[in-house]
Amino acid sequence: MCMQLRALAVASLLVFSASAMAAPQAAAKKELTPQQQRMSTCNTQATGKKGDERKTFMSSCLKGETPAAAPAKQTQQQKMTSCNKDASAKSLKGDERKTFMSTCLKG
Image 1 (cartoon, rainbow, N blue to C red):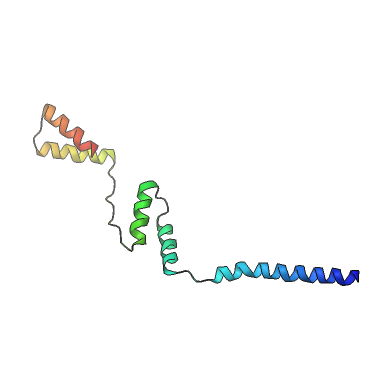
Image 2 (tube, rainbow, N blue to C red):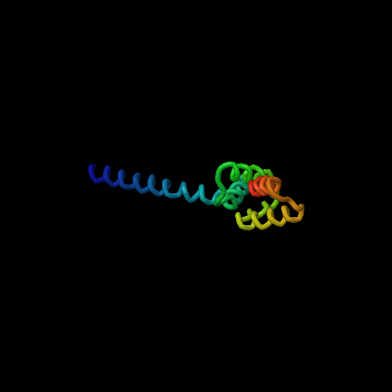
């Protein structure tokens, strides 16, 4: 009798463990909905973005909008060169030039 109980217990454990192992496989084969696919794609594309930039990107991406290409940020040296050319073109001198350059470099 004791042997039969052990055999029954072992068989029950095997059936239980087999069903527990099959459950994750069934979930993995489940097809993603279009919204889930879009979320996955947008999340991958948002890699490296943080804070408000990521939030804005995810919002537009999930709506299916294509975000406009963000203008490349200028280095401080590029800003200085550009602002200097603009100030020279306007023939600014003294305090006017200083004020213009300050405003221009702040963006």
